[in-house]
Amino acid sequence: MRRLMTLSLALFCLAGQAFAEPVHGIAMHGTPALPAGYTHFPYVNPDVKKGGKVAYGVVGTFDSLNPFNLKSIRTTARGIWDNIFGNLLYESLMVRSADEPFTLYGLLAESVEWDENRSYIQFNLNPKARWSDGQPVTPDDVIFSFEVLRDKGRTPFSNRLKPVDRMEKVGEHGVRFTFNDKADREFPLILAFATPILPRHAIDPATFDQSTLQVPIGSGPYRIKSVSPGQKIVYERNPDYWGKDLPSKIGFDNYDEISVEYFLQESSLFEAFKKGAIDVYLEGNPTHWARAYDFPAVTNGEVVKDTFRPELPTGMLGFVFNLRRPLFQNDKVREALSLAFDFEWANRNLFDGAYSRTQSYWQNSGLSSLGHPADEKERALLGAAAARMSPDLLSGKPTLLATDGSGSDRKVLRQVVDLLKAGGYTIRGGRMVDAAGVPLAFEIMTQNQDQEKVAIAYQRTLKMIGVEISIRTVDDAQYQSRSGTFDYDVIMKSYPSSLSPGIEQIGRWGSDSKDRPGSFNFAGLADPDVDRVISAMLNARSSDDFTTAVRAYDRLLLSGHYLVPLYHIGDQWVARWKQIAHPQAVPLYGYQLPTWWDQRAQ
Image (tube, rainbow, N blue to C red; front, side):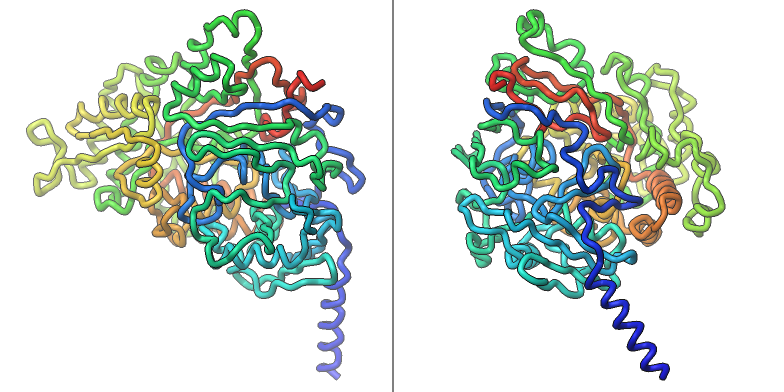
């Protein structure tokens, strides 16, 4: 009888899975903000008339039209699979709303089904979905995409199927993924929006791991019109694009033509913008923003300077220590070096006071540990790691001291020297050396003059206490190669933060990514406490549990001193020629270039 009851219960559960109610959208926590009958996202102009063109510019080069394999990493033409210009060629099963922390709506999949435990997810493809050659997008394409990316793709695409127990076709338009114990609660959403769906009939798996300039077939709103390797790529609208009337695509993809031109230096890109060869310039330098826009087109109104204020955490920019180097395996040395940067001096002398000091990876949000003392729940999650943290960090206070701005604050420098002494270093003959007389010295690799300027300021301070820093500014190709193979002592990197941090944190700080070429674990961190708290964050079922996990994670990263925290600014700056317009509404994540348009077409 007991066996019969157990079997009946199992059949009931399976039936519940098989006949789950299809939904139009899914959210990491809670429910989607937009109802099933929504007509468009709230941050687009739904009435815009499509047409015209836009010219973008970037610094770098490219030699491939395949962004998904290791040989093409960071050298692939922009726009094919791009979180700034948009995914012009390839599409995912669902699309992320820029106005919610982490919510997805239908794209290639018109609906999805999943259970409360998220033990599976089923994507029901839109029967109208088509490739640019007219062939239908099928479940076989979805299955092929995950398999070829597993076998020949680069990280993180190559790892997508590790948490999948079964991938199977369901009916004519469905694909179901059933998960194993490696899956977390975020994983179904990663499958849905962060994986490109590729055409099975147009890709040879045998050569997929090679760089190529063969024009690909996609399901997206654009096709490639022309390619000048390393110099320029031009996209043209596909007049037969299948998804133009989807609610998630209304107000997007408004140009008939999009070009992306490549420049060797940022200064060359800006000069091209000033001349009108480039329509939009994304500004990240406050001094440049304040001083460089004095050319006639700005004065007469032909060029417009826009400031956007997203509701996002600050993220973290810093000089990252490569823990693969023995020097930086000493936590006291890292702590000392992280305190030594004189932000107040640099902000006043280099940036006209435009920046604020970054004290948390999620500063300016409720996810930050800053201003939020660790409660019992968080301390329990941190476990023994809490005992290694400073009282200030546990109480939510800033841990980076403000200097007097002189560039040689004796009080702060004394703290730095004391910490270095605890790490085995003393000043002898004007040089900071260890017990064997080996000097404390390292190289900072920089990518451009702006980074070099900040590195020189850091170098200036450390030289006062006998620490020798050399600075090497390399070209883009060398920078990408060396950063991808972790061939550096210290490197300047940015870690953007969202209101829904998730699996990307494994690639940045998880043990599994430490030695994986091309990963974003630039520090080379492998810490079981960090791994454990990332797992807790990914598997949190409630918003409270999620917030607790992120704050604990923030404290762990700060306590490890894996980088020198630098600065942030809350605004986004974009300059544009006035024929390019944008919606008035600014979503949670800030401006969205794929929603902009050419006013000459109106």
